[in-house]
Image 1 (cartoon, one colour):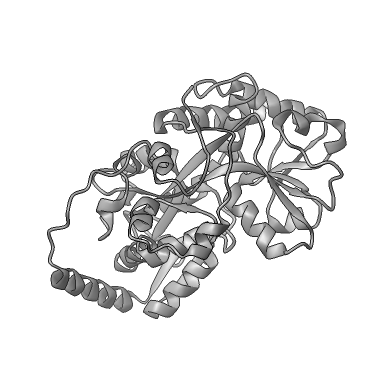
Image 2: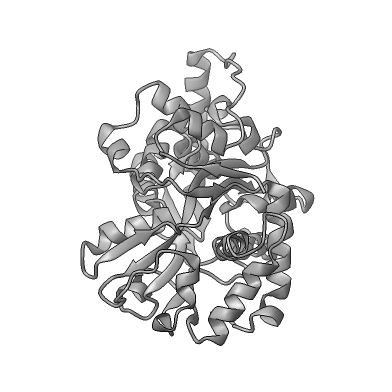
Length: 374
């Protein structure tokens, strides 16, 4: 099992370790004037298309609400937002279902779990595009031909409504206690959601499994379900705030954003399991059938600019270009000061390990756990 130890979100050395290796720097050869001309042409082409269609981007996920509003204001485009609560599999299915459809149900861009990268290429669902900041994206976090590229990562945590839970759980084993009956939920359907699958994966690693053995994670959730502790609904900010799902397994950036948004009503505590947790990278890609390909490219340029990366960081998502930006002192001090530190063990699975694990979880969830998450 390959485990990294996360001491601080702020360390450039740590960032390199987390993302497996820093990018190999290759200086851009295009003169600045030519780059400007290319960007002007892209902006004009995107404006001619008039709009961008996104999918599965909740506004409280990585601060996407501000990202979308800033993009619209900056370029004068409209943004059609599909299925904001969808999972990675929903995004991929939307591309497949709309290959011949140039209407409003066809997504231009997707943001999916790291493990979906090979599938996107194998099934020819995405088109290559290298943003102007390409060289500052770590090599091991992007497809060399530009079909997909890492955007940010987070750490799996417990989001807990302290007003509804007497004793805040501190570790995986705590979730099995009778006091948490009808209180524990996932932020997605494990048959389709990368976030939910990574939650099960994390439970496996720290309950007798490993990066190559996810079965103990399914066994753990069967125990939760059999005990009546598991709530089979897709949990989100509204359900945790109402006390319907007072304990959620969720990426820390979403949990921390909820804590800020709810501002004590109710009180939210974000807990990193003491025995360990898992990290997850997400990736961006442009649909091979994008109705608005230039708007899609402009969206990528925006997200991978310093401005776009700092918007993600404001939402507690650790952006993929963090090292480069920190070295150039373009990250505001107030954003750096808000980032959490965590000293527990964190597992960083490879893309092949993720693909194996997610297939097992998706295929065996109902047979092993028996909870139809909706």
